[in-house]
Amino acid sequence: MTSWQELRDDAASCTRCDLYQRATRTVFGEGPTGASMALIGEQPGDQEDKHGHPFVGPAGRILDRALDEAGINRDDVYVTNAVKHFKWTERGKRRIHQRPNGSEIRACRFWLDGELGAVRLSHLALLNAAAMLDEQQGSS
Image 1 (cartoon, one colour):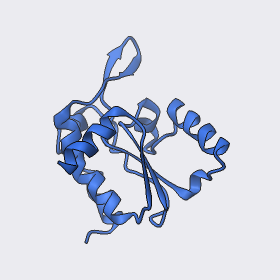
Image 2: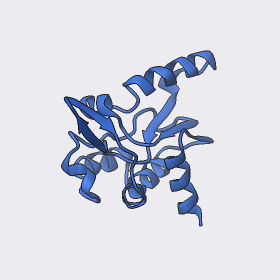
Image 3: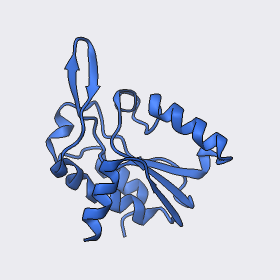
């Protein structure tokens, strides 16, 4: 079995789909590998792509509030995305989120499966349709 750190290191040079060509970096999941819960989003956003960490932009602030209201410490949760590169289109000077397609989601499934194998979980929450569709495709 590949360790979490080996997966993260390998993902940094991922070229499994074309998204790497426009992204700043691969945004791999973060959190304790012994976490009991993982939260899976769709893909990194603009801020995540710039900083290299999942859920640090606007969606991350909403997630932090929701976890706080639920009495869950974010440091106890593993957070990641189904897709590891930011898919975007330029509008003026802004990079606007574009939904990943099925082949991009499937290409990243390798990394997500590896992460979930390395993180010992008892609970998994899918935070959007792309993550859910990816999970359904993987189980059929």
